[in-house]
Amino acid sequence: MADKTYDLIIIGGGPGGLTAAIYALRAKLDLLLIEKTGIGGQIALSDVVENYPGTAPISGVELMAKFEEQAKAFGLEIEYTEVQGVRDGGDHRVVSTTAGELRTKAVIIASGAKPRRLDVPGEVEYTGRGVSYCATCDGFFFRGKDVVVVGGGDTAVKEALFLAKMVNKIELVHRRDALRAEKIIQEKALNDPKIEFHWDSVVTEVTGDKTVSGVTVKNVKTDAVMELAVAGVFVFVGILPNSDFVDCDKDEAGFIKTDEHMRTSIPGVFAAGDVRTTVLRQVATAVGDGAIAAYAAGEFLANL
Ligand code: NAP
Image (cartoon, rainbow, N blue to C red):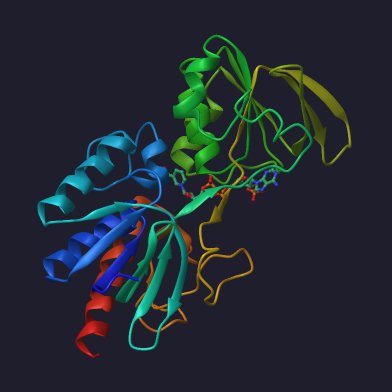
């Protein structure tokens, strides 16, 4: 293990982690931010963000580049590696990564979430060959083709609207008869001539040969089954927390429980953003969480 003991290690470079970094660096904490893949988190996959106050519509990548630039201006140091464990070491915390173990007095977990799978036959087999979890990444490959979008939340409806700009037709399959997404985007989708809604319906199988050629859809009220011929299946049925590496109190879905100071059940370990149990997961709420977590971590350090 390295001899150095950081004041704070932040896990995750999305809106929550970068905001925590900005606040903690301004409080002159000696910190390291660890990111597994690339700065930005899930919002970097969003083609447009329209609800971040004070900011005209902007792509997720551009918005996060601004966060990163601001944090780096305060001296942010980023290490690209995967966190495998966070544990209490008594007077310090230990963060184990694929690159080795790091000592720190406090930790902020802002590791976000990942897409939930449908868990139906054909889904895993055709992932990358027609099944996708990111319209901004893969939509281009389906220009002029017919695709299915599964889900009724903000992600499904926003991504359907994005795909509608390039595909021929979208079959939106949702398990209930009402969308969960924000009303303003619901209205846009319901009025988009390229989107056909299949209410009270679930995808039960993805079929194809080398690539996807269709899905089987079942109406959960009537049990009627139909086949839809499509080249792509975009799955947006919610998220799962990236929280396996830490053994603290979590809810039944694995999201980390915190108090209003973003404290987890492990002393000196805080959580912010999508990875924690919360009523709303937005850039705006992750930013608020990150600011509180950094403040609370500072208070924790001051009282050591
Ligand atoms: P979500 O809000 O949890 O919605 C998931 C959708 O998938 C729901 O409509 C749900 O149906 C459906 N679903 C869940 N499990 C399913 C299954 N096994 N089979 C079929 N359908 C299933 O997830 P999300 O849309 O990914 O959003 C995650 C969070 O990010 C939310 O807090 C959301 O508000 C936020 N977000 C915000 C924006 C924005 O622009 N404001 C954009 C993206 C995401 P039911 O409705 O029946 O539960």
